[in-house]
Image 1 (cartoon, rainbow, N blue to C red):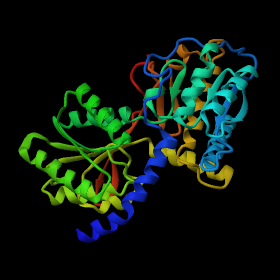
Image 2 (spheres, one colour):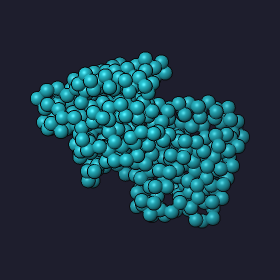
Image 3 (tube, helix red, strand yellow):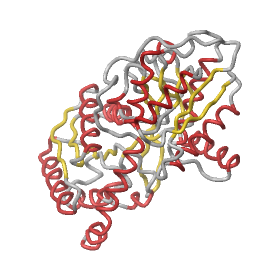
Image 4 (cartoon, rainbow, N blue to C red):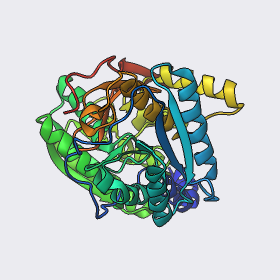
Length: 397
């Protein structure tokens, strides 16, 4: 244990910083003033089905830190265009520089130049600004964010959300007879968003939250919270522990060691993770990982996309690149139906699409639902307990 704590102490702070940067790029999980928080708009510009659909791709090409992500997104978009035959796409790329005001200006320029829909931008704050900039012209935005607070109005988020993952896991837990859960979460913005998503999913699936234990990003904080969570579980009031911590965060191996050391036996209490643990398979060797559940997209489809991307561009796609591909998949399917209203909010939320990780759809609140598989850890290996469904029941309305 001391060896684990010593090594974790050295890497916890930088790992937390890296994780925070990743979250900023992927989801910006903070509430932003703007159009989000309500229903998606029903309208949008009309298109001429006989002409190519002009799509504006907004990516931070000149942002030094995000430029590689921008290139990978653009590559994935171009790959998607080349692989679909539903519609003709006139792609035009605009550089946001990773700055909200620049993103808003580029979005207005794109619409002035004829764009019928905007794909991107990458950062949540930028997406919020873009949505506001073109709202008066009714152009819809398929952003690469997964921040639900910016969704709504003319802004949709393509990124996977905590709410979608939490609901899939809670539905499965209920089916397996689980009734009571203790939440372990970090006391930061991602942890709070994760905690809220779990609470909402629990309520929707008639599961009781018996305790929520938060930790500060320090060895002492994680250790104290593991003890508190174990004490809450050992009262007999909980049959599961749901951990919000990102698998890449150095707090995760601590929790998967400390919870069992404090009497939370994986064979008696179900461990559940809100994030994908397969991105860090070394976790599978830890006591708390044995038999744990987590959710992930259709891995066969993801691997197939990565293989096609690699054969085309010579290297692996960035993890966010799939969002660019998925956006084009949705646009092409709708535009290919030959309807003038193909890119309206009503149309965007009326269909399911097949993306790089399986089936997904855009919801009427601007968020998305993605088909997810339930995975577990057996003999230190990932196994799929419940495959991702091939279809989603009902429309996104």
